[in-house]
Length: 568
Image 1: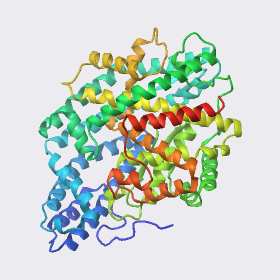
Image 2: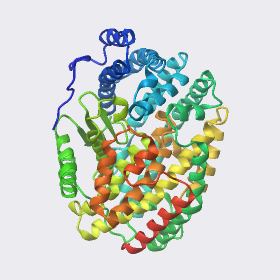
Image 3: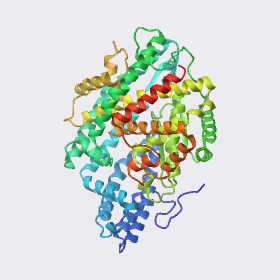
Image 4: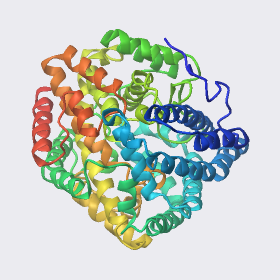
């Protein structure tokens, strides 16, 4: 396997991407370099790409360490120093370079098939940039850090031990209903204890984001977000159509599943702590005992699926590429982060021995495959796929890996896990619609108050949520949105999961007809990275880029049929 960086003619291999004294002369040299032809411009783009990659890797390493050790003041300070001191300088020089490139007399002479998408992105960024937004974005990142610290510090004394919030999840799968209820309440109450601090953070985030949009002469932050996220191929109207399709097609299926669950459990009404337990009273799936076993079994799954993917996964056993176990002081959630200069991904998660952990491992491995398969692309921007397709790589892998779950379970348990996954997809589509619709509402109004936010959240949750009784839990329900990291740290990043899930389901249906062909198309599309427009990336994988009612209905019907065929 190749090692990177390879071409160090401009940015040295050992460059410290977190040291402005070293970076500034290099960025200024790019700005001042004479450009006398389209080929000169192309070389500048490649040299800038590797310099940006060094900076991106410095940011990645600091973020990774911060999330691994949210309780380490020195590590947190190192991350915040980058956010507070480096980011403003990088945004400023980045804008100047973007403007320099789009205004270059040779830009139109570039091969548009190769460079057109990149130039379009730069033009959008140049049009959006405002110097006065730089300090606002720094404060926004600082507030996201505060949110992460609050969540990372949450623990619960339960069953005689102090447990992290991820470590509480397995109790929601226990067959003892009283135990599940106590675990659910303990976790929900612990989150609620910090609701005032979290609401204060969000109050300020709303103000900041509104100011950013105003400074950019845009109607509202939604317009700012769509432009900043380069959503060239769909707009708010398409998102609204997705919400309506989910409400019309997926919510009824979700409620059908809820009613079947209620009957199987023999309860008068479902409660929030009834949604994770096995309806047959079987013990929770326990696919592994520790992170080493998770790695070994995941490796076996991928090697059985495909030699190339297996080799790519095994390459991550080295180079500090995996941090999987949950522990105190570790940030919640899971992610894959590409270290862009060495072109080596990193997977972070909070494994607690549940089936959800297996799904998370496979999901993040899909992202890692995307990074590894596209890493020969010399242009950094083209190694970054649009999020809507990046999530096809991960969600599609979850579905493609279904037959390989026998590496973790016997046949009956594997069928049970696949059923849980498909049911989870229905729930996910409904949750995505909830979060996305909430964001459209939040950012097309003038800083709604805490009470207004909670009231509208309850309306949306009633529209898209499960058929569950929340009697006596109204206050806790009103703050459920606090647990969604995206609302605080990456606003408007959520509809991508819905769009990608529909793409992943299409990939799954193709695999049922011809597994090797579907996998070949999957790999070929991932090799493109972000070098093609979103609809073309879907097309390369054999998928249709559409998330309207017709597509949602067709895929929901396929889910309903498959669920009917699987044993409960």
